[in-house]
Amino acid sequence: MAEGSNDAELLKEKANTYFKEKDYDNAIKYYTEALELNPSNAIYYSNRSLAYLRTECYGYALADATKALEIDKNYIKGYYRRATSNMALGKFKAALKDYETVVRVRPNDKDARMKYQECNKIVKQKAFERAIASDEIKKSVVDSLDIENMTIEDDYVGPKLDDGNVTLTFMKELMDWFKDQKKIHRKCAYQMFCQHENKLISKCSSSQSNKITICGDTHGQYYDLLNIFTLNGLPSETNPYLFNGDFVDRGSFSVEVILTLFGFKLLYPDNFHLLRGNHETDNMNQMYGFEGEVKAKYTAQMFQLFSEVFQWLPLAQCINNKVLVMHGGLFSEDGVTLEDIRKIDRNRQPPDSGPMCDLLWSDPQPQVQSISKRGVSCQFGPDVTERFLEQNNLDYIIRSHEVKTEGYEVTHSGKCITVFSAPNYCVLIRKKKYVSLQPHPNVKPMAYANTLMQLGMM
Ligand SMILES: [Mn+2]
Image (cartoon, rainbow, N blue to C red):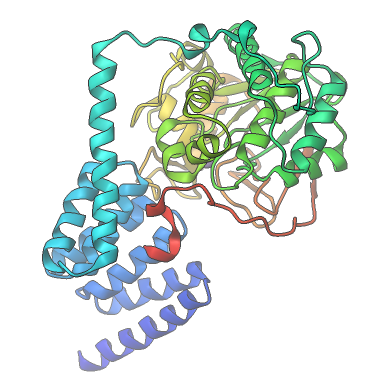
């Protein structure tokens, strides 16, 4: 037994080295091997939990932290890890309880106190928002705007809409303006929002085209977006695009990305498509930077407008009746049809489970279905994909939502394709031909994220 523990310790050391080199996949591999030799060591679970946090597998991270605490309920790092996982999953009350424990045991730990206070603030704010929401009927911010009477100051020399309309000239000026890190006048942004609600509400989510470029997560990487257009041409009636969700958060140029995409949607409503990702939601925006970015660059009201328009984004799109595109993937439950998807009431924040949650959150995996590494929705196996495609008379699905170092990945015998376009990677699909782009020079991400999400402090 002593020898077995010793071997386990060596494996842990090896894993720690990989962890320090930020090779989290190998770190996880060796922590797992150490746990196979010695499954009663809280530290191994806690260390693997941190590695899972770094790879954003919050479901697994939560399970490991919980396991560490089962083994040793006095293991303070376990409470930290569990709190971090719960924070990332938007379970703020559960996180607060663990931060409370840490602060009680370590009253002089400044970092713990700061996290406790931050988390407490969020819990109180959420409670406040709920109280308000039940007091009055939700009113549209768009309806309450008086755009006509907003004035554009004389010293503003940036792009303006042409008599309230988005034109190609406006879009070109806008992209150059943003490239120089300048802000568009808020009136112009408001004008775009108001047209958007109508456009998105009336659009049904299916299309026909011989050729379409599908881009995965762009996550506030504005310069990657410009790269895509340079390489593949500007959007037009004959150069259609579909951007598959997660336009915002993480990258610090989310405002620029989303306003550029909104602009093209207004310009070419039938040939430029946007689908909602799991980051076009309030909870994610609060944690991963978009809310902070909009407030820093514009106003809190502007963020509410974004939030409102995000709720109208379609959840999936069917191309030529043969390919279904969505951000996350397929379903925890069997038998979901295209008709069921069309009927989803999408004008809301997504629930914790069910088809709407799955479309935004699920991931494929090689084996049959199991619990989610993310702690939200599910992982679906090739069996699920096969049954879904057959039932709905489709050829394959295209989804995004996961980082792929090659930029794309083909799984489930070619029936499930993942495309990822940022950060630093970008992939374009044209009739199943894939092209990778050069990485973009570093732009500091997460500049506006909640302080609890700063990785170095976890
Ligand atoms: Mn995603």
